[in-house]
Image: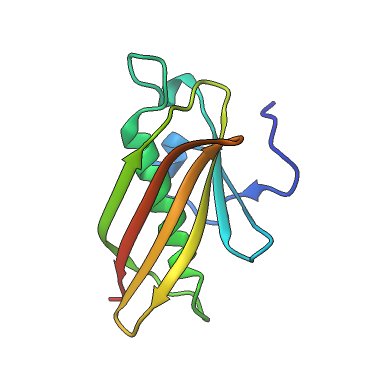
Length: 134
């Protein structure tokens, strides 16, 4: 049985890729921004025993994408146009990794968001994304 911090629920939508990588969880923070999280498992790690950069990129894209889609009423699917990720720490097996998102700007056709990936108080990565409304 996985230990999930209080307030987190299973991610409300999934995909074949997320089913392979998950389970993913989510909640809203005090500012009503989306937080997406994942417990790091061996399947998420590189040969060095830390969470793979591709997983961190995927987690950032999922968090940012969901935050953008659900920032509109009704929710609208958006397509990732650009994703930037700066790695500044590591996550290890057993770590609870959270993506704290922030919607920076919503335009008519483009939207911008940023995120910080944390394991506890430790910053693992920062990300920013640009999204297109199809």
